[in-house]
Length: 149
Image: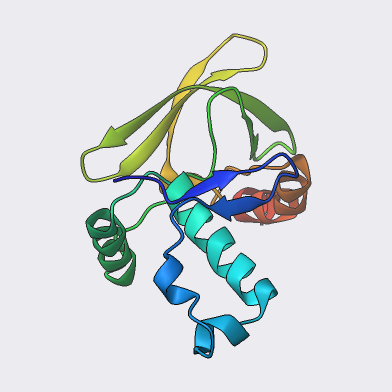
């Protein structure tokens, strides 16, 4: 699809395909606010930046509506924090991300001291394994209570 916008030196976008017939004196277009036109051009430019076709956008919208759209929570080299029953927090570095099977996304991780490798599933994030140390620390009393209470 041919791009209809281009970025100009100010960082703003400009339309490259202007239809002169739209600018006929006495028409609604002549009276249109330039800020509204710029907002329309910026919106079109953002869409063009995705490199998606209208058909692909419609398909993704349907996938999202059906609840099948999955946005990754974490990525490679990110640290996951796992509190244990002894009040310790293990740090795991994600070394690989896989997608497939019934579990969906999974993360192959290596312990920060290099002594162990483990795989976590997408559903583990926020349920025993955390993205921030603070979340893991706040889960410690729950972990202790489960195993010692």
